Length: 387
Image (cartoon, rainbow, N blue to C red; front, side, top):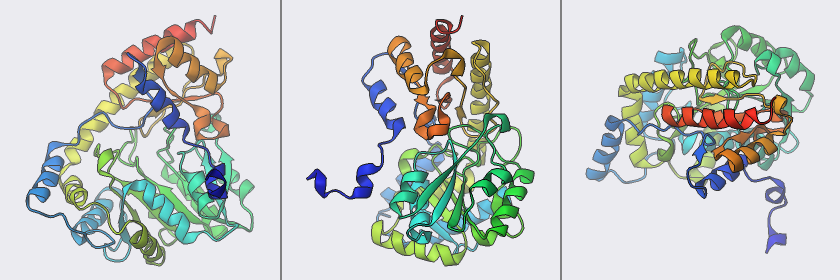
């Protein structure tokens, strides 16, 4: 049977994150910093709204694009929080998690051979999804000395006459890097100059710690060439509800909706009712979780620096990306030995691309007790490597 599989599917690797998640699930007393999933329960008012919708028998298909009320509330939220104006009827699509939005955008835009610029290290889905859509992923290595921000010079270096899409993913997974308005203005100039479409994954927009998130779509000349991907998983601790959305020019949202119609039909109805409650009435819950992550972030940074590992300060998302180069181990060796010797699971930086070599990703979306215990175990491990 194997020889009958799609050639494209054969060559894409399995997720490097899942590998360590599976290993730690089989190990007693292990602590996992591997999976990017909030440890908070979904706020009660959101769960309650989902329950009520079931009790009232609201269990049927919705519009393919998502419920009108939800799309309306999403657009009000984007205006209120990020100064973005979108038409809820024509420029908004509710998806099954942010990941479906990424896949739909690539499939709606890419023709065979189109090049997609992807700053790296990056979320594991971009390259496979671009490739499966028929495109050619072209990675741009981000540099630690630039705090893993993308520079216009780096984009210029990789643009060709085949480049169609530039992926932006800030706040970033796995580095925690952010881009401010000045950074984005410079990137916008390059995007406009080369007529690039920007796919801006803003799933961590609510998780910034020193300044408010800025969307590149809010910069003049960018709304008409930007597709924003966002969702409810991270900000509202709703990973299992699988709720995401895409907003962008109607000329792109319409074909994305067409693919969504044939593949998914519509996002889960119960989750859509819960999402309406989330986006309308849960700002204080988001703030509370953000404050907790910020406290954990500081504990983790201090811990890694104390043990002698360089770690730039991430200002977004809930990940640290410390350098383990001083230990003399590769990322894969470090993660494997740490799990075996001290029962702490982290993700090798190479799971997010070749430019992640020399780093590990640690999620701090875990309890402060677990994080302190993990840090003490990592410190013990590192002390055996650095004399």
